[in-house]
Length: 479
Image (cartoon, rainbow, N blue to C red):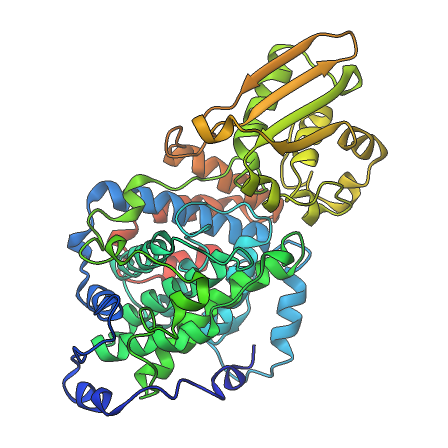
């Protein structure tokens, strides 16, 4: 996480045309063929975005994800990895810092606070899903840190959040041929973080393009790390990346200003092909958040959510008990099966990427909350025995309706077959603000956070646009 190492070989392609642009804050107009003006278009969107541009329904939807994110930061502050990341940050020897690590009294520089809070929000894989993967976790922490440090208003925070999420999700949607090894939350999320930070730093179009060029060299994350502490680290790193990129651009650091469309740029590295029409003239038209993100009911991958809803419903209605089940078959698409590759998990983190564990814990415990996804629970003999009776494989029917197949074969020969519907918390079956507030209360209870402070967070986020600064919210989220 020592920033100087990330820029040692930084971007030698910036030419004399950029010097001309620096003087005026305007970007040059001569880009290579293929998708002229893509990076410029996004940079100008970031600079020109205004709070008044965002519809009220999008603001309301964003508040639910923001509330969810703060609750998960509290829960993550009590995770196994939180003290480790704090221990690491203490070794860096900061002599000053005024950005908060949520759930603690720790104050550190903004970029590292974004790292720590990003790790906490993603620690339980319980954060919202949509667009690039997990849209809020990489944007909320840097926006919160810079708004706290700069005493910016609630409106400033909301604008930065929506701007960052819009950039992150549009870039992800434009990537039509992604490299499957990359963790898209970490890669595209780095751009979302940079966009939010560029907005809050007040960068001009040239500086913003440079910030995107700088952050492109930092954007990284591998799916092979799913089910380990390094998945949240990748995401936390993405959250901190934008702070460093915007700060460097603000003091004159240069980079390619056509990093997205360049033949040797980000999209080429990320997966060869991309569709610029998803971006050009579509930023904020409508705002991506308007379609809704999934706020998770269970603390594990988004893929498991509809299956777990259906398992719990069927088990309750039919009084299905684990000891009466011969086998359970779950069918999804090839990408689902490839992502949830922890078929025989032995740790809580691996359980978050195991369809077999998700089904087993509900059949045995009738619940799957933060405490269930622990090493001790996953290793229980009854859990491991049930896991061996669950299979997760490719179902051709998934691609027709987008629903998972679920089949219970009982020991007495009875068969229950069903298909899933929209998961609770998904755009087609959304949670209300009050339901998200209940989720935050559960997260606060897990972290042993004072009830009064948790209630203050719920109330403050609901009317965040009225806050002159982030002071009251910071106090409610820190010790």
